[in-house]
Image 1 (cartoon, helix red, strand yellow):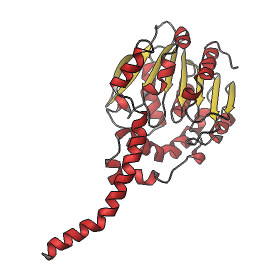
Image 2 (cartoon, one colour):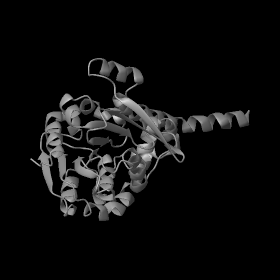
Image 3 (tube, helix red, strand yellow):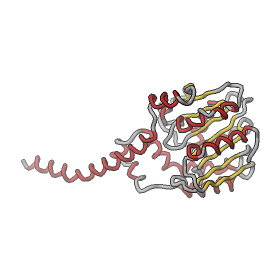
Image 4 (cartoon, rainbow, N blue to C red):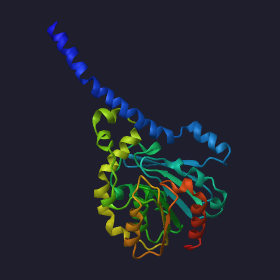
Length: 294
């Protein structure tokens, strides 16, 4: 009886803790699911937005890389790289744009550790992620490549532009998470690292959290790359961005000393400029195709 009573007491003493864990994990997981698309959702979208882009898979060591692509191989490649968490369909509006279709072969990748590129696990190194993603275009040394990176996808795009200067002809960095000293952490960030909470969260959220805690080191390692970029570059930053500090774009602009670039600050936009202001993004990408910064 004493033993049973002590076990019950221990259970009830930890009950508030487990209630708190559940109260945190449910809304955090729900926030992510709000932006997650199922195969059914994707099919429904493309019923009214043109043909669905074709999926491609490539096995690289223990990793399986997935990306979607649409358009003829005769056109330059525009490769889009999402942030954290995210998936290729974060760019679905650009992937289905007729004007962009006329000028580019459009591709959007699932970064290693996310969506259909989860096999092989997370990759915390910007360099390692870049080398995996480069497999999409590395072998075709003649075809021009243009890169669009948003949030934490921006420094990966920057790495690729510095790494492959002869192939990458243009770059767009949207809300770039780039300055190691401006990394934002929220009150719940340490809790997401705590095992009981992690177990209850979707895998992409856990991957994003692990990346978050590696950002500062990785972004410091990237610093020499910014000055090595030579292609025309657009830098876009929203004034209402509560995810990436707006001063990140100034940091990027100050380091890209070898690249012709145009830095645009958009006071009324938030973090997802490609969704909030697709007309501007499209206009700039079409100009970039011609080598113009306007």
